[in-house]
Amino acid sequence: MLQDSKTEQKLLHILVENCGIIQSRTKLIDRIWTDGLEYVDENALSVTIKRLRDKLGAQNEIRTIYGIGYLWTSENEK
Image 1 (spheres, helix red, strand yellow):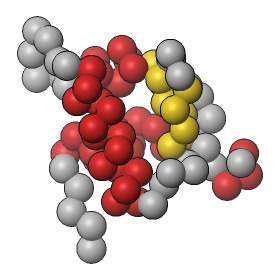
Image 2 (cartoon, one colour; image 1 turned 135 degrees about the vertical axis):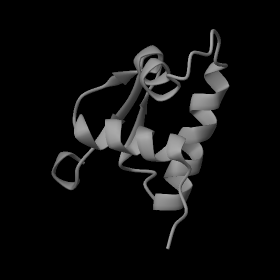
Image 3 (tube, helix red, strand yellow; image 1 turned 30 degrees about the horizontal axis):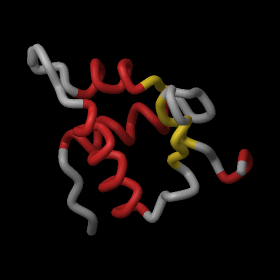
Image 4 (tube, helix red, strand yellow; image 1 turned 180 degrees about the vertical axis):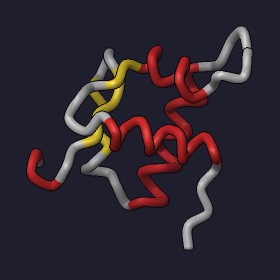
């Protein structure tokens, strides 16, 4: 069984819940890191996306929309 961090679980939930809808990097950072931190390095999101893709084998499902954010694509939308 895969062991996901709470951060990865939050990210997966947001992406799948909004299947087919682009989620901006800023919106994802705000929704995932809600523990009152004043600043979160945007690299933290990139690393979390990579880990999630690798664990799920979801290189095709989690799409990067360059300059905007990320998108979860279902089987029917590929």
